[in-house]
Image 1 (cartoon, rainbow, N blue to C red):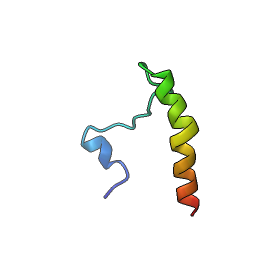
Image 2 (cartoon, rainbow, N blue to C red):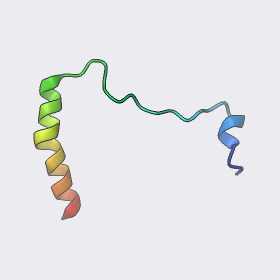
Image 3 (cartoon, rainbow, N blue to C red):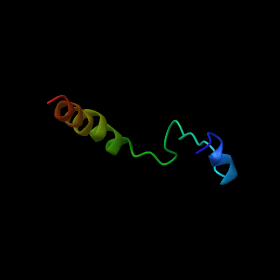
Length: 45
């Protein structure tokens, strides 16, 4: 498949926004302090 096949199909490279527009501060805190450390610890095991 050629490197520029995505152009033929009408696709473009997309970058995610740096921050969610409707961010829930409490959900972000739980993710940062509880969920993410658990994922990191599991991945290193």
